[in-house]
Length: 637
Ligand code: SF4
Image 1 (cartoon, rainbow, N blue to C red):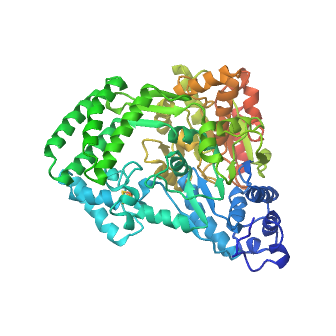
Image 2 (cartoon, rainbow, N blue to C red):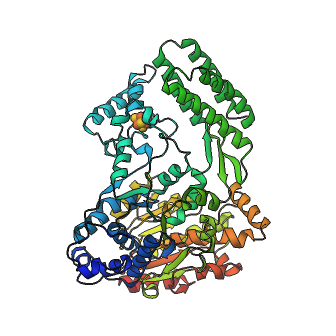
Image 3 (spheres, protein in one colour):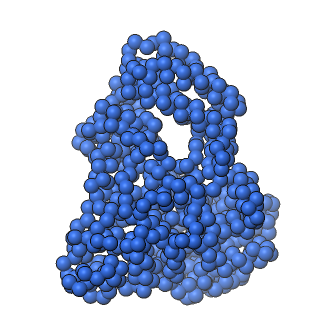
């Protein structure tokens, strides 16, 4: 491992000539540039141990799977080795919030403190960048309606002064305005190096900056989408890296299901038809073909809601042939012919999935979607990522189940030749928190059970005087309970799907310190609200995946064919991981105090209850509501 040439000058010669991991350990010691220059820095034993392991993984080209519980300080533990390394490093996260925090707060602060000057680039997914080629054709297309034209012209004007083309800098959201698909390009719409706007393409410029950077900050969705693409100059975005740091790694398997599978919607057909019509308008002498395309397209779209995919595929076939007949006329037409055939191939895969994949449909009518996903994510991740000649560091606060990495390893596709490590939270859960597990609640599938659940939630949020997250396992329970809770309590109740988008709800929750947030899965993880605003986390029941989920059923079948037990080996560890994420929202620093309430009496009645409880943070467990009241009285005087 070479050390960065721009390492801080305050280090002694002995330190610089030491091994990489010794160097990293030295960086964290008191009286160093980091300790003295980094605001709020405190020495943490577990953080240094983790940083040392990461440095060793970089050095030895290893795979490190590390669970670092909340409060370990894992971000700094990987930033120092990444910034000290002379190699090219990708740091990938699941959430945008963490990417922004790394790019705009953490990395500048560490570089400043340590006198480092590594080149950093942020690379987002394609839909975040303006596509000048598509903008130009939309603006000149006479078929585009007036309302859309107005917004398109605003984007065009903005683009004149914003060569970076990052759409988040626009004062409005192009997707909310309904023009997103007209100003961005998906991988199959992008012409790559054959595109006439290649030289001034913001996406290609961002990609070039990533090529030139020492460290690239990106996200799992882009990494997986990139890995899933067959090579081609219009597809791949990310360059090659020597080391990959994948934070929030617990989310990789579910994301891999999406990115290594197929998602086919009617909208995809409509987008192709719109693009085809725009391309034919551009050719000016293909009005007869355009008419044929519109007619054939109408038949395929009409078949979508009620027919078997085989019927839709048969209706789509003429469009494949018509577009192929003109593929020689222009680059755009060649690309459209290729896309039409890819859509046909996707339809064939829905009808007959490849080995190891499962297909199913969701939604009804025009909103019906066909999905194909790998039953096991391990083999695809292995083939597309882990086989690369690089080191990989995978981190999360929740990778183990009942103290073992086995479940995470099987989903990620690792065997025993990797390094595993665990770093416990430094928080004093015995002092800082209480777990409330009531015994008396009845099955919430009955009306009486739901009433009892609502009463229990109301009593709890009155004890905490609001300041609560109420995390539901289903939309139906959210919609049943949250509006009634809103009627009953004097605090502001923010409801997912009603009170704004996720970011807006979180912003309101942080601002109104006595508010209550009611949400489903998207609030169980990646949400950080330290301080008094969040003093109570309520979970309505054990987050088992719905048993009728086709992907889960296929996974259980494969597991049991291999001699495993679907509940023990899949459903339980999965639910435990989600539960750990949910309760992990509560204590975010040494000053936080609060109660985790899991309103599922099955934890006393069912054989798995003891196993679940073993995985909870080590706070005292109580089943009496009076103890919850006392906790808040004691801690808040
Ligand atoms: S290269 Fe792709 S993203 Fe860039 S302008 Fe061309 S089509 Fe759009």
